[in-house]
Amino acid sequence: MCECSFVRVACVALALAAASLAQEYSVDEPNNRDVVFNGVQSSDVSLIFDDADIIVNPGERLDLNCGFQGQYRHCIWELEGAKPIQVQDVYDDVHPGMSRPEVSEGNECGIVINSVSTEQHGKWTCRVFITGNSLEGSKKVIVTVKPTYPILEVDNSQLLEVTSDAETPVKCVVAAARPAVGIRWFLGDKDVTVMAETEETPTDNEGMYKSISTLRRTFEPMENGMMLVCSVSHKTLTVPENASIPLNVVFKPVEKPVSTYYQIRPGSDYEVKLNFSANPPPTRKEWRYGDTFQNIAVSIEIPGAKDRYETYIEELGNGMYTATLRIAGFKEEDANQRYMLVVQNDLGETSYKVRLSMDDAPKDGDSETRDHDKNPSTEYSVSEGIVFDDDTMSNTLSGGAVAGIVIVVLIIVTAVAAAGYARYRQMFCFAPVVTPDPEEGKETKEEHSDTESARGANTTRAANLKNSLGRLTQVFKKPKKEQETKLENIGDDEKRSLTTEDPKKGSPIKEQNVDDKEVVYAELDLGKSESDKKTEVKAEDKTEYAQIVGTVTDNREDEKKE
Image (cartoon, rainbow, N blue to C red; front, side):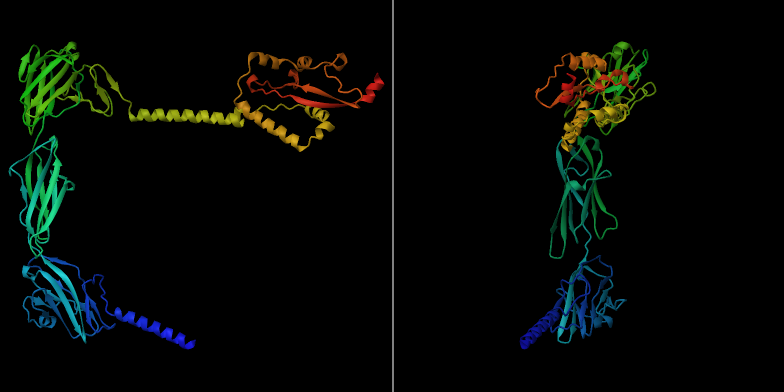
């Protein structure tokens, strides 16, 4: 048994030793994918190497670092496809343009290329020779090539014409660069790169790339005249290289909401100035007016004149225009008219509705109000806060008013709920009125009998439960009728006369059996007399209670009296 255990321990020890030998060479840096071990390995040596790519511009200094821990014989550097370079020869100044690194600790096999050239682009390998073994690590050195100038592939290099309601693709091409370039798109100052896709294609085996970025966008009328820019960034560029082109966005006259002009003084000469945009320029433009927007009877060409009305137009550039309607001697009937500016170009027609008013402008926080006596050339465009139709104007509630209404409703609901809860719990003003009565204790003692005491605790619990249910139903009890209220106000004596009779005068309560030794009478007690009450209780808060009292009499005493 002992011999078997010893054999097992020996096997485990051999397995651990084999595992440690398999991992004898390690690289201190995290990037060690390209480290290769050859020959007999030893745990006393390790290679210090970083295999991350190096990007360097032509003419810049290139540091090729390679360190070693332990005893080694010599080390070399190899460029793929070129002759190996012995590190000691570099230290002895055998290779011109190469030198020893400034720091040699942890970089025992490192070399420096003072001015790198494109011929030194490629994969570099550091190989360290030790007794019966060699270790090596490789990295990629990318010597950059400045990109070609970006080119926009458009039909007209001077102007890019697009339609506002159609998606337009625009391409920016960089023919060659090492490594690939980065391309961004700008529309004016706005970055629109998110709408672009870039494709990078290798052009040779030396790491050269062709980059094509395609922007797909539906341009808006307000972007007419802006500059579209393709911006290229690269390791070799201190500032991005840009290719740009102005936009010519074509669109029909842009629609606008109803425009209302306020504070027009009667008798004054008033000018209605309405701005609009259209590209290409309008081919037809005229002012119209009538009783309603559906019944426009009169039209005036621009420029033109008719009666007290005169029209003309001003071009502001970049597809912007101002149409003016001048009214001489403004009258109240002019305010009752409805006006319309109709503009048409090659892409469509648009009608702009206008109202004139002698009233003050609405003071709504969501809308902009202007004094048109001071600024007669500016229109007031109705937007979110106020909406006009042909015959009516409706104002929507502001956010503050809605919030106030909600708060008031919540307060009312809370108050009603609190009142209901207080009444249910008989709290505050809903609490029952307690009237002390000195004779109550006496009556209680007289009313107790042997029969009642025999009922036990069960009867008491049932009575308490019944009283609790009575209080709960009292909350939802309907008000008593007038006749019931009058009946309750009658005194106790009258109540007894209505409910009981004197036993001597023929009481309706008769003996159960003449031969019985005891006779039990049932007495209906409706409460105390009205005179004994100290506090008046409202009819709707009263609850009637009927109590059955057992009375025990001795038949022998009755026989003696007879």
